[in-house]
Amino acid sequence: MKVVLGFSGGVDSAVCARLLQRQGHEVQGLYLDNAGEKERADALGAAACLGIPLTVRDVKRELEETVCRPFTAAYLRGETPNPCVLCNPAMKFRNLLALADGLGAEAIATGHYARAENGALYKGMPANDQSYMLCRLTRAQVSRLVLPLGRFEKTQVRAMAEDFGLPVANKPDSMEICFIPDKDYAGWLAGRAQLPPPGDFVLHGRVLGRHGGIHRYTVGQRIPGLVDGRKVYVSRIDAGENRIELALWEELFKTEVTARDFNWLIDPPAQPIRASVRVRHTKWENPPCTAWAAEDGLVKIRCDEPVRAPAAGQSAVLYDGDLLLGGGFIV
Image (cartoon, rainbow, N blue to C red; front, side, top):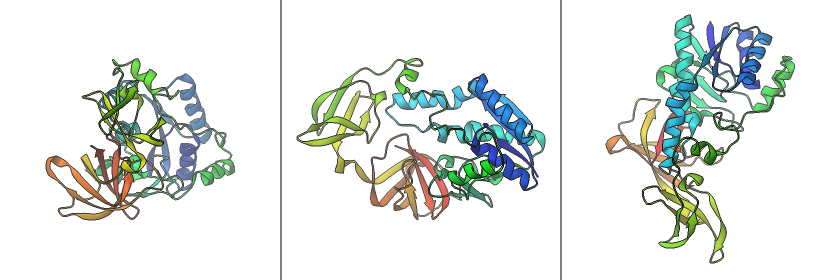
């Protein structure tokens, strides 16, 4: 079978390529170029070492349109967007499928730590599950997806890279957002838009001080200092009033979450369903819940146990056991 593999030149994609080759597949790599010459050269070198052809596609303009611009707008609305959730269906997997169709390849593959089986997505190993990031893939994308690392942990993948003799076996992981490599969100935003001015911190209707602009904060973030001997946290960002509302720790927990633009990877249920939910990319917070479709395309989620600080713009992702049901953006 011919497989088009999303190939960065890192340890995950390199091990994917070798595993697919050992299974007898013909592997074609696709490098989505949104960085610099060194990163592109590293990917080309790793592909040559593995003996796979590599297509390089400049996606800087596409990344700007499909990810960077919406990411900027969301931050200025007081939301906390997850760029990988935006990028995967709209750019990364769309380009993989386009190349696969052009080459007559049956399948696409990536190095995500999740499982793709029989047209459905499932959690990967608990230590490094990345299924949350795939919640907005289309069913057409999932139907042709192969995820070779779904049953492995990262430590096992690095060990395999050593066994395979891959020169990238000890290459550091890339943890930051690819288009903000220095993690300076405020500086990156300042180069793209007029930033919000300082405004009020408010706790229970009382102004406590001034913030440095809503783009510098996210729901759940602790604000230094004590109020009446207690720690306080961001509970809501009101972009319209340029105000950040604070709360005590116990006030951050919510049992009801609403999601918009919900992307179902199953047939949309006509009745309330039982599931579990993640409201951020964590490994430990996954309480049981009941979910149902509401008006205006919204999905309402009532958790059996409160979740901490659900943040507007993050994704609420539903599961049935390990099966990924879909996800939408928290409002």
